[in-house]
Length: 73
Length: 380
Image 1 (tube, each protein chain N blue to C red):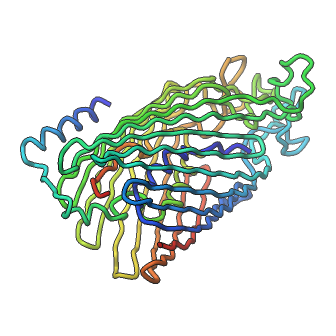
Image 2: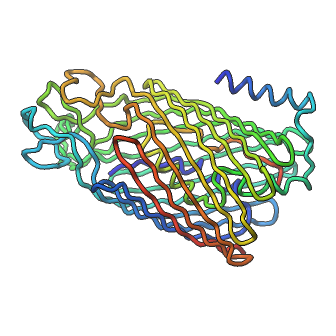
Image 3: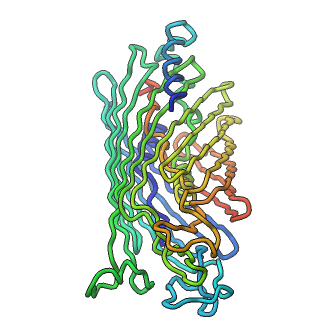
């Protein structure tokens, strides 16, 4: 947990140091692609695989509800 | 038989983010563990529809047909049965093996995304799934807020609540039924409530890459045991397992996605998880997609998972005596798992895409499974 918080802080600091580019909306065609998500285009199979993991493994959560805004919509 | 509902609400919210075009998709998935264990056949249908630029509706439904067998302890002299023996069983007659079952699961879910003037988005979801002995109803919400003018940095907060009902069949011989004086019902319904919360940060790094980090927390309260799972106490008594009636867990995820070229992209994902049952796990996955041409997109994905055992777990039949909590459910044990998937999307026309995938999931030394998926997506 602590490491993630440090990373999140680092992301913001990197932005201040210019290591993160200011990407304009018209430059986001690559970022808007389905292939830039772990699920790809087949969200049904992705949901099934998550159900498989949920049914067979003891860990839960972290499935991706948070994050994901690329400013493409 | 309870495979238990997935975090359908969260899955659906993810789906709503991944695809924003109007489409209807139909899929069929076949899952087989082999060796007489679980087989699942799942047809699904999904609709995604934008209403202007401010609203997106996603609906999906499906039905699992499950059959096969699930491993636990049983009295070999009376055959592999889910029913508990009401007498002491000689240790040599206690075997660990597959108990047959079959069931159907119907699931329906929906999510509505509303985008505001500043393009922040609120997604509200509902989900429902039903098995012969398990009912799940859930609601979820996620708010996405952009932190900068170019919308390159965003934070999102998600929350979901599930109310589940578990039917424990008294004909199985469970003591939970015996504890109710004068009970005439043949099933006892137990509740299980689940709360999930997640907060995440997404940062676009450049025109080809972005990174996501999240923290999540789960709280489960109620009947967390499986009425079909057994333990052996005092070496001669086969009784139902007893898991604690609450669990708190959480962790962190990190996802890095990058378009290496116009055609080749890669997604890296890591998850750390820990809960108060002493289960700690690490998950690493990699998925790549290659757009061979305008017609064909190929995919390759791999996943590695490892977990430690719950503190009340033991696989042996000569271990438990009078412990309050005891389980031989292998899902509570320490092991590794691997998943490998290949996929192909064939863009037949501007509006029609045929999707196919094949995968292999294994927990070495325990079981192996294969799954196939075929589907067609029509954009409109």
